[in-house]
Image (cartoon, rainbow, N blue to C red; front, side, top):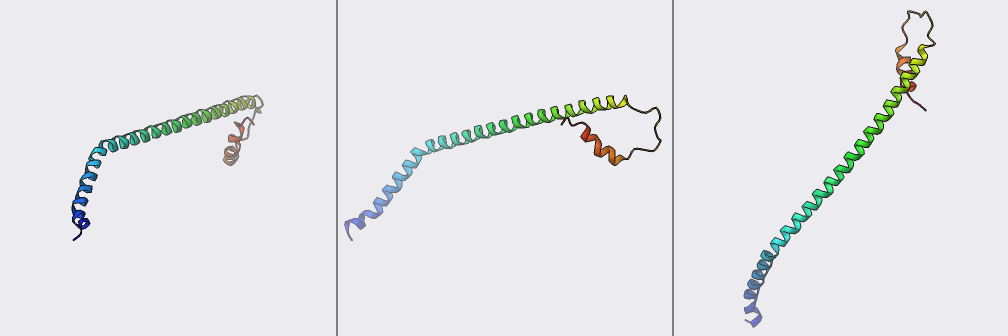
Length: 110
C-alpha cells in the first residue's frame, strides 16, 4: 500500500469536514441573500401591481369622460329634436331595431 492510498481516507474525511464547516459558515450569508432576493422580488411585484392599478384608473377615468360626453351630446340632441316634434304622431310603434342601431351613434361627437 502506497502513502497516497493510506492518505485517501483521511484526506477524504478532512475535505468533508472542511466542506461542512464552510457550509455552516456560509449558511447565514446564504439565508441573507435569499431573504434579500425575496424582498427585492416583493418590491418589484408591488411596483408592477401599482403600475397596473394606475393604468386601470386612468382607463376608467378616460372611459367615464367619453361616456359622460356621449350622454351630454345625446341629451342635447334630444332637447333640440323636441323643438321639431310634430303636433300629432302615429300610434304605430317605432321599430326597436332602428332605436338600438341609431341611439348609440347619436351620442358620438365625431
